[in-house]
Length: 50
Image (cartoon, rainbow, N blue to C red):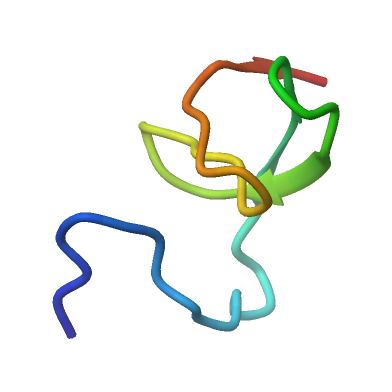
């Protein structure tokens, strides 16, 4: 599955540790994996590790 251009809507498997972030644009708190985190709410890349 290729998800170029946006976030993929996938389930994170057990054992995979995501990192927590806070969006500096809308304030959303979320957990994700990957090198380029993006807010699931507003799609901003302006995020800070929580």
